[in-house]
Amino acid sequence: MVEPFLKIEHVQKTFGATTVVQDFNLDVGAGEFISFLGPSGCGKTTVLRMVAGFEEPSAGSIVIAGKDVTRLKPNQRKIGMVFQAYALFPNLTVAQNIGFGLKVAGMARADSDKRVAEMLDLIKLPQFGDRYPYQLSGGQQQRVALARAIAPKPKLLLLDEPLSALDAKVRVSLRDEIRAIQKELGITTVFVTHDQEEALSISDRIVVMYGGKAEQVGTPFEIYNRPATKFVANFVGTLNVLEGTVTDASAGTVRVGAGEVSLKGKLNGSKVGDTLSLALRPEAISLGRSAGREATLGGEISEVSFLGSVIRVRVGLGREAVSLDTFNNPASPPPTVGEKAEISFSPDDVLVLH
Amino acid sequence: MKLLFAWSAFLLGSLIFILPLVGMTEFSLSMRRGEYSFDAYASVLADPQFRATFTYSVVMALVTIVFGVLLVVPTAYWVRLRMPYLRPVVEFITLMPLVIPAIVIVFGYIRLYNTSSWLPLTGSDTGTNILLMFGYTALALPYMYRAVDTGLRSIDIATLTEAAQSLGAGWMTIFGRVILPNVFVSVLSGAFLTFAIVIGEFTLAALLNRPAFGPYLQLVGANKAYEPSALAVISFAITWLCMGLIQIVVRLAPRPPAQSH
Image (cartoon, rainbow over all chains, first blue to last red; front, top):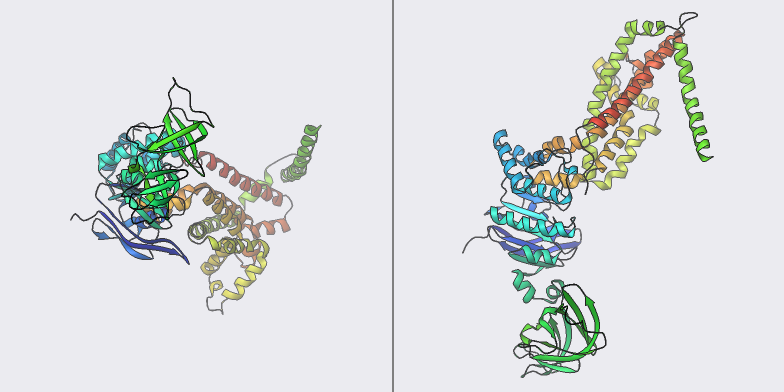
């Protein structure tokens, strides 16, 4: 078996009586782009800071490229880091910022200048070497911060919510740029974010964190389509959660509102009368009957939101309600509130949350 | 009406401040009967004691500045970075020289470091000079600490420190290449204030019997007529020069304005 490039084993972190990270384990392969995704206070940044060496684990070990770095100082770990607040040195020019790590490492001036020029080309800011950080936009500053982090060729790149301080458009373009640069250099990268779209779009794998623990580790496809826990299902993407009561365990029939659906093979040992949480993504539900979506439930449209390319419709099913998305069609008007409606979905798309 | 009141207040304030200065300058130029001259200034500048005491005070000021910077900048940095809970204590300590008169400090020094004490600093000129430098540092502490602390507040020292660490920098590099250059203007402000304090200081220098500019000013003031005014004008000029230098350095310093986010 190939040894993981970054190995985090049984890491724990306590601040006084509070445990912020508990028994965290993760293996990251060489060249992999992995994201820590979770709400504020879930411990994702603390894990990243422990990998960087800014926090010392209360227990456990961190191994990078076969070397135990758990007790190593941050400046001895050969890790590049990009911060949310850019953290460019205000007294240095862009070129001096990028060359900082090279100078610290004692690289010869000519080699350092060459590497700085390469980095400026890589981030597409070749003319900006003589500028000061305050003369750049937020997106440009973060690109410089990225170049500065990767200039000394670190073993590992850590990105601590690098896009959070940027506006929506710049976020998207910079996120694509980060991913392209990461792929080009093949550098193992750990990315921390609370933005699920960011994590889903950029990562090879995602670690969804909650309460200091890894709830699920998987590819974006697995995380979105096969959430392992209720938290992951709720946190990643929009999710409709319906309460259902098992009416026939052997046939897999579950009562939802006034209707019944068959979820054969998904009840996982539930008995008649058990209450289940059934989760469905909005895109897995059709308004009206649809081919391949044989399960149907009747209800009434309670809300219609026009979002441009899609229309989000909320359908009341007795005490429950679901949201679904339909594509905007200029030729037909959107559904109206109060209208009777039938929804259909495939039982295969239903996630039974235990 | 409001504008008129504002201008009147400004003019009145200016007169209160400027008139005595004009009077003093005019008097310092009146040594020769019936005409203005720089005789008083020439007399002062020709006095070897003036040059000796002024040079002594300038050297003491520079040494005090170096010691103050080495003491205050790392302290303020470390308190902000690692021990923010100690800030109120450090602030209180740095304010002490404002409430404890210099005479109390110097008597304390003499009692603690006299020739029969465990550390007889007053037993030699060098020892006394060192003691005087400590005293000056204490007097300048409120100004130096506040100037540096304000400078540190304007930058995100924690993140900058971590960024430098992640790039392989050790503490000396971080301090010398990241922190100090970014608070350079604040350090200079503190340095010029220290310079102004040291140049005119009387109590410590007189009671430690050092040949400083402050006691010389007092000596001339007690024995001559026009020269004290000339000396006072020179002292003002030095202070203003310091303030002007602060302004020039602030404007011309290579360090750009604070990072925008």
